[in-house]
Amino acid sequence: MTLQKEPLKPIEAGKISMYVCGPTVYNYIHIGNARSAIAFDTIRRYLMYRGFEVRYVSNFTDVDDKMIKAAAEQGITVPELADKYIAAFEEDTKALNILPATVRPRATENIPEIIDFVQALIDKGAAYEVEGDVYFRAHLDQNYGMLAHQDLAQMENNAAGRLDPLENARKEDPMDFAVWKAAPDDGTIAWASPWGNGRPGWHIECSVMAIKYLGNHFDIHGGGIDLAFPHHTNEIAQAEARTGEKFVNEWLHNGFVTVGDEQTKMSKSLGNFTTVHDLLNELHDPMVLRFFMATTQYRRPIAYTTDNLKLAERNLTKIKNAYRNLNFRRTDVQMSQKLDVDMQTQVQRILQAFEIAMDDDFNVQNSLAEVFNLVELANVYSTRAEISEPTVTLILDKLTELMSVFGVENLAEDETEVTFEIDQLIQERENARSNKDYQRADKIRDMLKQQGIVLEDTNQGVRWHRE
Image 1 (tube, helix red, strand yellow):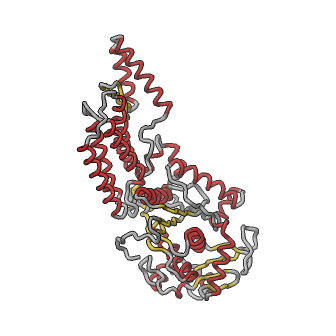
Image 2 (cartoon, rainbow, N blue to C red):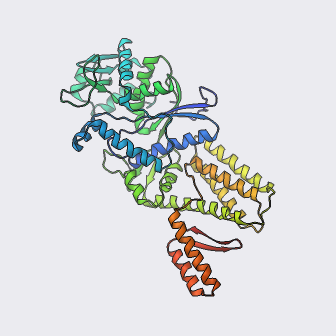
Image 3 (tube, one colour):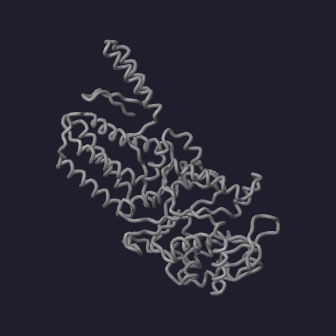
């Protein structure tokens, strides 16, 4: 609301209530949708890292005009279409290690609550019915438009070319918006209401579900910057008209994902989108996409290019290699059991700097720099002749903990099949070296290098990592 950084002051000490607008499930989610899900999952994870108990609610819009059209095109019902793409959403977000929402409500599961909400707005004089449609009186909200930092006159002027003249003729004011829509008599999905058969307006769904699961007043509401107006603006107006209370303390909006040389916003309506479903089939590791998205500060736009994705992959590989190299030293039976106090101090300084960066509006770029400081520390320590087991554990545990904030876990794991094949080749190389067949040993090393696998001969044996 203020366009300023504000101290986070939870309504209830130690707890955060958080609502994030979810997808309309008429297609696979694209990378722009994933950006929002990953950005707010990263924020959620950091709040949990800082010790907060987070109640995280994110919805599915499972009925609207786009869904009705898509269901008709596919020859299935709207609920069948919703089930299909909700299952796909859950599959894709699981691959990206996005934590399940505390509650993931569907609009169609909350129709009675939506009807009651609309009726309450009518009773308060905040909404009115015309031919089965119900509209909210936007002018009644003196602060309408504050979130978008525009006044009503600006908004009306900006929207003039997009407003439907026929609908405007039914409204008291052009800026009034539908909270309930009359359904045409064509057999499409609809529900009985005091105003006739119809379905909810898009904006009313989120207000109703947010209040139902988080209360009249909660801490954080998130979504893409394109939702600030009209969606979030209308949410505020109708929610506060209904409850008489402040709706949300903090509004967080993530930036767009842009594509191409002209950096055009990625969207389904423009047809320039890449679905997460397709991209996950192409990527060697889904965590590359997760890492790419999670390491840009949530408010900034992300330029989606193959080169940027490859850069993220290289950076993630550096982190994993540092973890694996130091973890490999655990095979050293000569390790001391005494914690290295100097290394402990350096780790603590890095953790403190990481938290300072993340406390500053979730500045993931600066916090990632601290992760790489810890990576450098791990690399240096892994090459020491004498190391201690508690120090190795400390560094690895903290690297794991920080990367978990970005949603990247299992740093030591690789595909079992690939690891088995590499280990077999390493053993074959060792046998060749024992038999002084150095030509065969060198050939195996070169063969692995062509696959991006680098071998290192150490005092503890042979270890490998990806380039």
